[in-house]
Image (tube, rainbow, N blue to C red):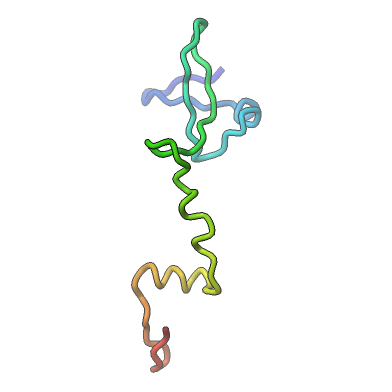
Length: 87
């Protein structure tokens, strides 16, 4: 049986994680029942109940490479490479 740490954390056994489809980063809920609690995997949602990633699905579709996208996000474009300005 897993034990609770001093921080109130417990490791969910692998067989239980596999059965519930729980992966690193997932959120779980503890629902009270008459006999105790039930643990279940939570779907990603915002306070309004929407999937927070739905807005961004497909937003990264472009011909840019990942390093190019990251440079743009960091504001590193345009940059000077070998004396020529790159865009």
